Structure formats: structure tokens, C-alpha cells
Length: 399
Image 1: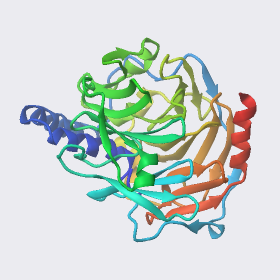
Image 2: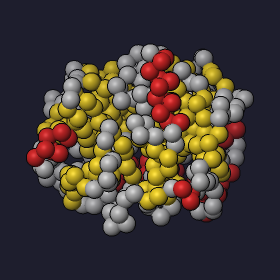
Image 3: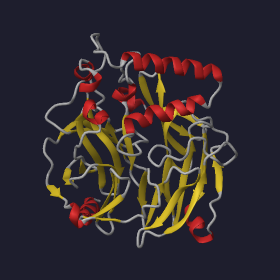
Image 4: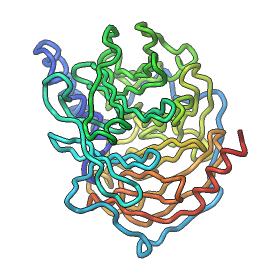
């Protein structure tokens, strides 16, 4: 996830291994053993039978071709962040850009979207109270929420299972980030490798289950852990034991109002769009038929598809970073040019953005009409995309 040579596929495993290594020796032993078996067997072709071919809703919207294509000229783009600032990932919220620097101290740098100057930094890596064992991950463990005129961030530490909140508005005003532990009396299901906050009293989490063959979606509400019955079809989607669990992994984006969710498959050509609190939704397929798990398992690891690599959610809809390459191309670091597919929350294609460079993360400033991408040199590059404003207007009209 952080740099073109180490992104989502490695992220899920690396983050998970680091977290398990921080736990007690008994759990550590069994996890290392399962990882060893996984690496020894993941290169083999699967020849058995599976119970479920897809992780799709009954309602499927097929979008073989985007509504429109927007080719972007690199010569008209510009780098907006100082080369002195390390960038692993970034997120745009209102008039601010949050940069995951990977530093041990001041892990998150906050920049103004007006001049890209720093407004300060917060978050430290460590084991003391209020510190984060493996750092802060903006994609997996961080939620930005508005409470009236106040912007807050919710931060989850996978190793300790603790949840903290930071009043960003107060931080900007006083220059000091105060971390307050939330959900103190709630035990977050483990191992949870994705956690977002949906409301003051509700967390949404994904956990690996059944010896890393399935992934469950859980609501943590008022101290209780609840399964989403309407998402049972997704929780039951399983890979054979000792097979790469990334084949059932998803990238998840949650809308700014925390009411809508999109899950894009890493290795398949479709994504699920639904309401987290109820699980009701539909599937969007980027093709004329859904990819089947048995077809993917019949291929060697090098031949398998790497479809989606990042996802972002907005008021008007969502956008996914499409690679659509095989694992061999990805692992070799060969040149390929990703694109960004944009949809509204009804699953309608709004277009495809083509920056024509290699990049691994992106976000959009919908107010000003800019696309930002993290290029192969870890620089944040800005493109002017006026059509983004019309997408936002499209959302307003739909309401």
C-alpha cells in the first residue's frame, strides 16, 4: 500500500504479521506456522472443489465500459507536497490533507489544501498509552467524522484493540492533539484488520475467521458484537485452507456520512455497494460476467488477476483504482498505467480517469475540482478535473 513496490497485497499480510508478533507467544507460534504453510502452498494450482463461486449480491449491475473517459496530461500536472515530507498514503477531508508519513513521531502530517503548508502533526509509534504499536493506517484504521462544525478522527490500534478519538478542530486551533480512548468497555473482535466508526456508539469491523479462510463483517454496537445477517453471503465466501486469503480480501470505502459502503475485491472484477447498518445492497461488475473463484484458483499465483488497488468514497459516489494486471506484472514492477473508475451510489458509471502515469493512491478535492495521485516517486501530483464538480452536483440533484 505504501509505494509501488509494496502495496495492498503485501500490506494485508505485513500488517497482520506485525500485529500477531506483538501478541503472546502461543498465538504467535500458530500464526507463523499458518503463514509458512500459506507461502509454501500459494504457488500451487488448486484442483479441488469450492462451495461458493462469488461474493456478490443477487442484484448485479454490469458496467463493461465507463460512461466517459478523461485522459489527463502529466505535463499539466504539478507536485504539491515538499520532497522533504515522506508520503505513504494521504486522505483529503474538507480543506485539509492528512498525510501518513510513516515516521515514528508525528506520524500524520496535516496540510492546508490552500497552500499545502503544514498545520502540524500528531500520533506517535510506541507501546505507551496513546501510542500506536505499528503506526497509523489512514485506509484501514482511521475514520474522519463531522460532529456539527467539529472535525474528529477515530484511530484504531490493531495490536492493542484500543480505539482513540482526536478532535482535529481543537488540534488546529491549539496545536496539540489530545487522544481520548473510546469504547473502553468494549472488546473489539480479534483479529480485526479493518475498523471504521459509523456513529458515536457503532464500529464496523472485518475479522479473519475459520483459519484465515473467511472474513466476517461485524457491528460493534453499545458493547455488543453483532453479525449482519444480510451479509452472510459475503461472510461465507471462502478460500480453501492454506490458500492466499487475499483472494477474498476487499478494499472498503465508507461515505462521509458513514451511511454507505463500497467493497472492491482485490482479485475479482466486481465490488459490493451496501448500507453497513442493514447490509442491503447490490454488486457492480466491471465486465459482462462475474469472475469466479474456481477460475482464479485454477491459475498459478503469477497468473492471477490483481484488479483493484485503492478505493475512496464521497458524497456523490465512490472511485476505485483499477490495475487489472496479473501478479507476475505486479511483482516484477513492470510498467503499467492504472486508471480510476468513478461511480455514483446507485452503481452508475460517471467516468474513467486516466492520469497516464504509474501511481498507487489517489483522492479528490470535489470542491475545487482536483485529482491527487501518489506517483511512483512517492510524490503527490495534482491534476485539474473540473468534471468532479459536476459529479458532486449530480449527487445533490439525486437527493
